[in-house]
Length: 209
Image: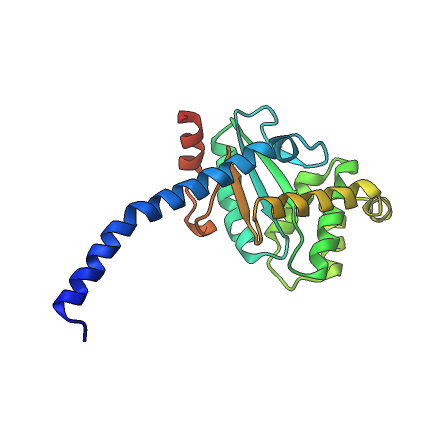
């Protein structure tokens, strides 16, 4: 059992360290935000990254996601609600297939669907799917939203699709995003669990700065 004297010393040391730890935490956050600013063109203006919501919106929300990610699927309705309620939000989607082999197939198919003008429908359908995750599901879903499967498979093999995925992996690594979903609002990487993110509040914070 700690004596009163030892406890007093520990409390005093903790009180002395608290401001220093706060400064370190603040400096780390500022460093990360600066990294986001430095990567701004790649994050915000990559023509290969699909955009939902208002393409000219005043606040950008960037999402790194994987179609096999249950947390991504769980947060999707709230992201969709944000886009519906706030016409000033621009959602930039970064395909980040890190969880399963099927994740890579889904990401390639999703990016390829842009050629047929069906990205939004396909993306939303894949996000809404809750059953066993198999390759057949990806192409069945593609067919269900009206995609030409032969053309889709051909477009999946395009170098532009592979280049976009590699760019996303490199971006995520440079920003120390190692899991999904990963959200950036404005220049700030959201670090709280996705279930706890208050998207309208995060967007309002960007507008107030």
